[in-house]
Image (cartoon, rainbow, N blue to C red; front, side):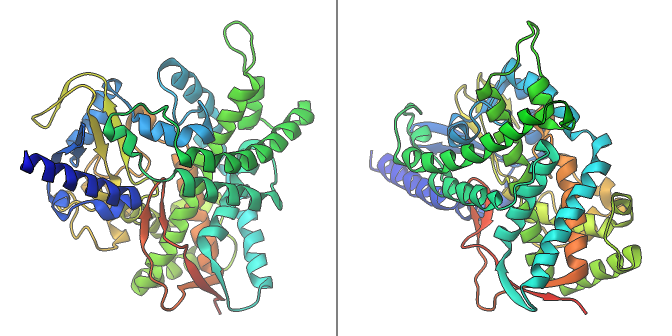
Length: 446
């Protein structure tokens, strides 16, 4: 009895640490093991740390694993019943609808929007004086939010981008922590204080989305064939359009997927480059040789393999989506372990990407491991910054293109350095952000 009580107390303490910062709560032993069964209060959780296990859960037997109700509850107030949280036939329809907007054939056109927006931010930086200091997580989030709205909705946010940024920061503060109710086995519909705190943030968010939607409807036949056009022109088998609520939810989902992860990837990339001057020098050499002082374009991306490798290695060490949680619908078996129905299966890309069995010197920043010649050496499903299987992020290729172009464009003109004395700590909640932001000194390159 005493032993069980002590175990319960330890479980609860671990959950409280994870609620505050998920990535700081993973025990060191997890980075050497392939599957860890954990008894969390009233539920079993299985931490899957092997490529074979990831393949089984996300690809081979994905139908047996639904998104965790707790994760869904975190996102539901913001994205409603959008692509992120839907299941079954609804998800299939939504995914089929989003595919044309993110197809590779559209990337060249998108690249011009990306570099034009990047040039606007760089002009603003020049106007601020040299050097100046800025929280780059905010700067990059404002930039990528404007880009995704132009690409997917044909709408320039202008000053409204600041309102969206504030709303999202407020929402993360209220909804970003892990839910204990799920592990206690209590129903997710029970009211929580955080839900009430997040409503004002959602109201701000909805106000901007409503403006974008009105502009799209008023454009009529002049509207470009972007994602919003696909939503407004959709008709089901009986000829019915989407309801206003469905359109809103899909807009919210694509906005969320299309800006936050790219912004954080850029912030972490510049942090890593400062700490590794040899990699920064190699990147500068490649940019100077390929671009010769001009702005990057879509056609340049194949000739910037090291820039792309920097992005890939950043996503390995600091994956913005740092954990995937599923719930087993039926009993299963993973790596010889019985998985009871109702159990939670957690795949932490943070742990998997730093696992000692799958990576050589896993804690070391080495972009070279992602250069084309080394690609065959990578272990399948040991690298999942965008997820895997049917539910892999539909904007994966757009995000990689955007990150690579902006990394080259910004690095070409400016040098970024973390404020002296500022302690950089990864904070794992809804996404993987630097705690307290990432204030950096920004100065022009000569």
